[in-house]
Structures are given as C-alpha cells and as structure tokens.
Length: 124
Image (cartoon, rainbow, N blue to C red; front, side, top):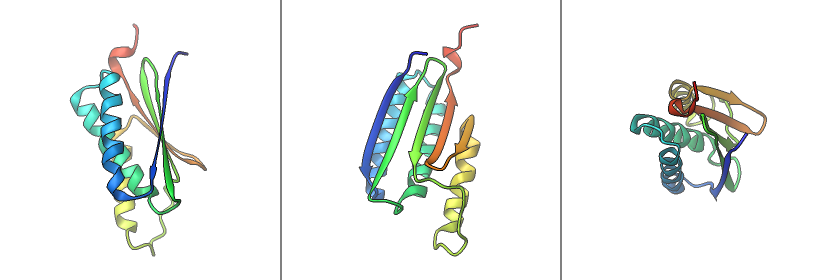
C-alpha cells in the first residue's frame, strides 16, 4: 500500500505544540480533509502531545498518510492516569477528547495511535 511517512521530533515543551499543530494542519490539507476534520486532528494531536509532556526530553510524532486514512502516532502517551498527578483531570479529559474526535484510537506500550478516515479517498 502506498503511503507518505512524516516524522517530527520536538523538545518536550508546551511552547512547541504550535509547531505540531501547524504541521498536522498542513498534512491534513495535503490529505484533502475537510476544515472540520483538520480542526479535529489538530485538537487531538495537541491533547496527545500535552499528555506526553515531561515523560522524556523529546517528543516524537509520526504521520502515515494513506489514500483512505491518516494515521498519527505520539510516543509516551498513556491512558493510565495517576490520580495523584497535579494535572490528572486534564489528562483524563484530553483522552476523552481524542477518543471523540478520531475514528480509531489505540494505546500501545510506545504511545498512542490515532486514525482519521479520509472519506473521499475510498474508491467505491
């Protein structure tokens, strides 16, 4: 299957989330996603990045663009929230937001995989 692969590595600092949002927007545009879908993936990737902050010095984000879907992966994201963490409620809410905006969400030992279907890309 033909795909484009993009990898972005940023410092694990909140002020770099804007770079991720801009990159995600550009990739969404390349995928011919609607404006609403682009906004959804930007919010989802931002929430994933915020969840991963502080777990390592750098943050790796990967994009796989297929004809019929966009797969986004963020390392060090976990759905296991320690209630003693100062921002536990925000992280919990972030995961709920991600699940509501994306077509498919999967947590792995490496991080989070998020999939947004590209409706126009499917040949029927």
